Image (cartoon, rainbow, N blue to C red; front, side, top):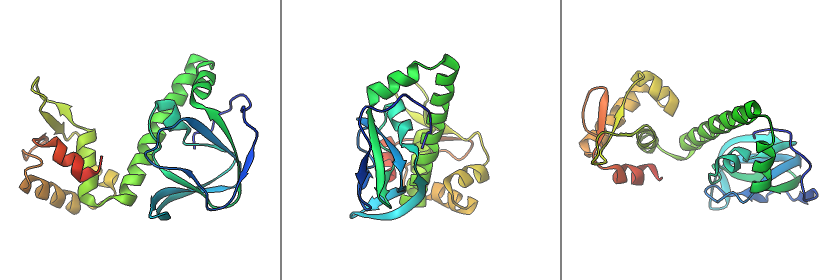
Length: 208
């Protein structure tokens, strides 16, 4: 997904039959997969089937390179839609090649990786989670400590309409979800600052 030019890979290209699961969402990244040829479907698998499709990519491209660069688990499931030819490079070798680039190029790649990862996580959240879970995840992502006791709060710096658009829901739905979360005592306050009195319950709701 993050397409960059690196030295030749250490492993030769190998054909993979259509239907093969190439990446599992949530698995640790131990090597970066480079698709030389073929199409790959990205999304969320349920019971072995691509229940929610995020998109289709076609080689040549680096698949989930951003996750490897950031040291994060895979953000999506990936399944070969056609026969694909793939190569692999270990994460340490991949990162070392990036670090060999000029500093400005490194900074650009890392910024792109963080942006791509955030967009992918949001896309998956919209596909696989209902409005309540999306809002809970958004609140947790934007939470900040309020004092030394570890209490968390979220400052709404954007209009609710803008936040709702980020979550892929209507503004009225966003307001309704906040009301439900408040009734369940998962958030507190009614102004621009929302308290999170029970972060673990929010994590359970968000599935994170």
